[in-house]
Amino acid sequence: MDRDPRSDGTHRRSARFVIDRRHPIGGEISDILLGLFHRFQLTELTRYHSSTVVMATFSLINGFLSIALMAAVALVTRAPFIFPSLGPTAFLLFYTPTAPPASPRNTIVGHLIGALAGWLSLLIFGLTAAPPALSAGVDWPRVGAAALSLAATSFFMVLLRVPHPPAGATTLIVSLGLLRQPWELGILMVAVVLLTGQAFVINRLAGIDYPPWGPRSET
Image 1 (cartoon, rainbow, N blue to C red):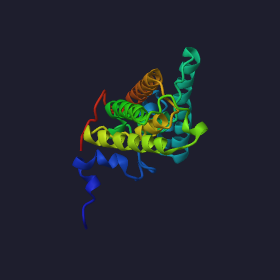
Image 2 (spheres, rainbow, N blue to C red; image 1 turned 90 degrees about the horizontal axis):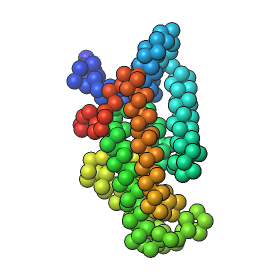
Image 3 (cartoon, rainbow, N blue to C red; image 1 turned 120 degrees about the horizontal axis):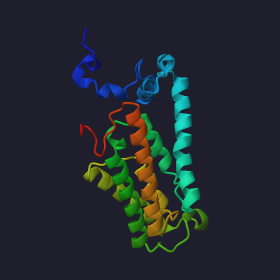
């Protein structure tokens, strides 16, 4: 009988991201829950850490808190801290926190690449003062800006080895004119940093080896 490669200690890290009895939907939500239950001495709940219902409930609560934090900051500062691309980032940071795309480096640099690529695309096609595509419609310059921004974002994330899929949404938000001013891009990046900080705190509380910057492994 062939040996299951996941039983080998050298493959223990990759086993985090497969679907098995400990990770019934893949990802590491069950690991986070187990760590939090131990941290706060909720020993009676540890037996349910891999329950799909419990993991879904954690995702519900944590997703609410993540965006509520951004909304509270937006309310206090009167600045738009809530952006659509933060949603998939929040999910990624708590679904597979030790995966390279969820590291602080990939998250922050990936969104920065997306924001800059989107804004430069607006500049190239003369759309920095144009109304958003949602209100003005889509014309050929807007098509060019959107296509160029996504292509450039993909190119530089791969070239710099900082893949972060939600950054693709960020660059389209900018190139479609929803964010056009440099100060708005600055606020976007502050929101990304705040969300990453929240991920660092919660994952570390759970005992997850969430990196302080770059991924633990580049493989």
